[in-house]
Image 1: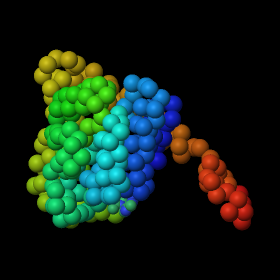
Image 2 (image 1 turned 45 degrees about the vertical axis):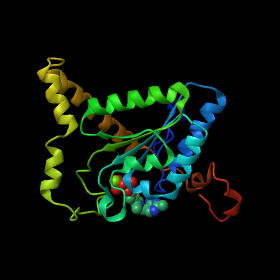
Image 3 (image 1 turned 90 degrees about the vertical axis):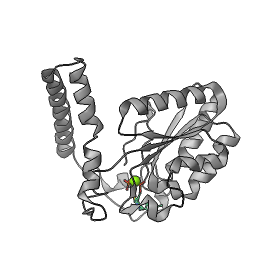
Length: 229
Ligand SMILES: Cc1ncc(C[n+]2csc(CCOP(=O)(O)OP(=O)(O)O)c2C)c(N)n1
Ligand SMILES: [Mg+2]
């Protein structure tokens, strides 16, 4: 959630559900103001689609024709609460219609469909026509967190998505088309496993930052003089 890399133009997640939507809209405003060809991809979960910040952002983005691609990753649940239980509109892409924003649903279990939809939306945005909204329909196999036993759904429902797992189907397609051999795929997996293992070891071997670091880059440092290392 707290990954952030300014040099890679990656502005991270947000602990406040939906709070990244106006931030992404603001980044798009900055790009337009500076006259660049960049667009800001602003992603959020279905839980965030019920936040009022989405509506304010959609309205401003359309009014000012901002270069922003809004993507809702609709995995059917916000923590343990289904979209059906909390949203009158379950085809979430239709929320964009209220603002005359081009809006579509995409099969998130198909990498080709996601690629095509994003390419089309990006071309539209780069033409200067303003924002685009994609509802990418996907699923979450595990609970929202380790404390979520996911009892609100059936094993069959989970299985129906796992059968179409895009990692699995893409690997099958690569082999079928002869784009890589099973050994080459295995070598890639091994390389990634090593990279993750190295990262974990680096993190575990790194010293904890001092408590005073909590207030670096905060606006309120002088409000907390009692905090010491
Ligand atoms: C404003 C706000 N309200 C409530 C929470 C608690 N909360 C954390 S995640 C979450 C659900 C988010 O749903 P979704 O975006 O669909 O994420 P998913 O459960 O699919 O990972 C909630 C309500 C929060 N972090 N921020
Ligand atoms: Mg969700």
